[in-house]
Image (tube, one colour):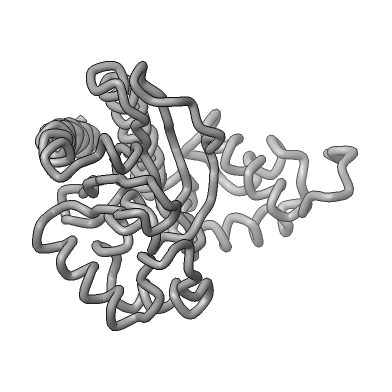
Length: 260
């Protein structure tokens, strides 16, 4: 069954066609499945054998069916969607209640990526868009994530992207950065004290899963004159409460997807 697109891999398409067909007629034998997807029996066998070897198809008494490995894959996707929804709702809620710029971020390819961002009434709109990529080491959102990544992963990120200087406050040596990240882990939050942009401060907390793996971060930024230590302490209390709420709800989704 040609697709009309010469930029796809036909063997991969065939594997998905087989999996789709299994969803309609499983459990089924080789001949019936080959007829369903209009393939020679020998070709269908090669694809099925590959899927069996990779754990996505089970062969029992000459009959094939999809394996429960798809539950593992689907559970991971569902968890990502669940935590994304929780973060989006919380970002909007916090920007409304604090009046500040509130954002949620993830790590991708060693960069801090803005997943959601909302501007409250006290904050001037900025030009940082959703999806913005920047260095991990010079924002509070980035440092909150970076501090909780495995040490090997942190070193890979630094080796790949370096530690460029945004301002005179930026941590540009690995020993100094590691000391800062150790502090972040101990205190449970990260601060950007004009490390990326002059006159801008930020504070963020990590979002962890049930196994204490970092999934994202959530935080707020604003002008240095308003973001005094006392005010940032107030914001931290709000962020920590939100962090706990997101983590508890996300763990509930994790367990309910397993139990369900």
